[in-house]
Image: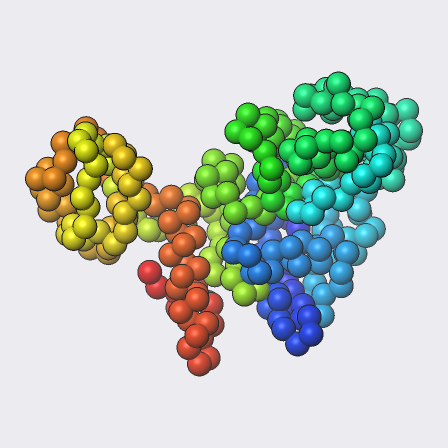
Length: 316
């Protein structure tokens, strides 16, 4: 079953097309990544999917309904912007947000306290929201998105303001909820989180689809296009290596992206002359590399007369 279906979704603001005939589907029980650079139309798309703003054209079907507002009590939402009441106590605020999503007050209050304890905020239940750090406020918003046990949860930059420990907690909770059948739409710039969690993605640029589908299939389609390198020495000089398009070198470890048809054996020979190699592995590209490659190609196409963003016209 498709939990979310978007067909030819279009939205303009002051003559600028923010979302342009966007199409994608999200299946039940999946973690779906909606990706794109700043200004690509992700948040506008999310707001239309939630019924916050109407589309100029196209349709949205959420949980089988053509009107998202009719099923809003079955949806959870974490906005990119802080959406909390600054002068309200944390536990009361969470309970209130649960109540407006259909929970009775005792249940909302009980769940609010459970979530605050789960997220390490038990000692801040009576604090005012504006007394919390940004990371703590993000945890409160995260709890608000899940408090009423929604079937579909849309998270817009959920890891904003979080340290690595709390990022890990969020990820664990997402996976726990997924196992219970909850569907997630995840909009984020943190590609490592997409790599670890998302099963399907839709990459958009200037409101149009650049790339979409199962993440495993997308990565496989690029072949073994990268080399993961571990080396010893004072730091590698990787300039002018045969078949190498780009290098990410962090000292002792590097990642080399290969040009199509590059000979990995020739590369290995060249590397042996420069550094002492501890590991040399051909790998599929990381999603961040695909992201940068595809968005870069889309940027070039957008400057051409009549250029569009259909997948078959986007070349590395």
